[in-house]
Length: 206
Image (cartoon, rainbow, N blue to C red; front, side):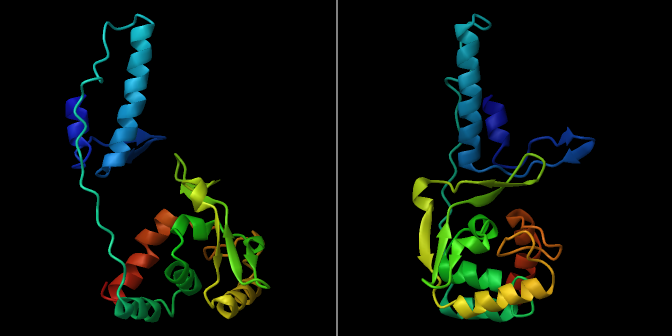
């Protein structure tokens, strides 16, 4: 068990096969390792209660600690550069909402037009899109109860209205989501960050 936990942070776990596909396991963070340990520890505790094993081998396992990454906000110049670099992107309004409201990408991806109140100039966050076991989009509640909140539009009213008109013109509004991909489906945050965001960040030299 110690050996397994030791392999997790460095991305040294062997690849796994699922549905005929081989998947490489990326380096895992401390929180993910702790969750794995909790599940294994509980299962082995139950095995002890049922008399299947004499003791819990996970009880004294050493969980590797990883230093929490310090998040650095963008500078004013970087923010301007990112907006300029995304001006020709299909997701340019999505970038502006993320930058100006500070909401998580998964929360922005789950927004419906009914969550936007243009009369009051507010955005209500009640859900987020997360990644399922087979990379499917799963709509769930945000991480904590405090994550359910109402934010001002921060002057984005006109841009969001123009985005809605453009979405309708392109025939992408049937799903009711504020932000969709070019096929009209809700955005998958994990795909977006690997594709368009990396391109735009590179152009903006961030």
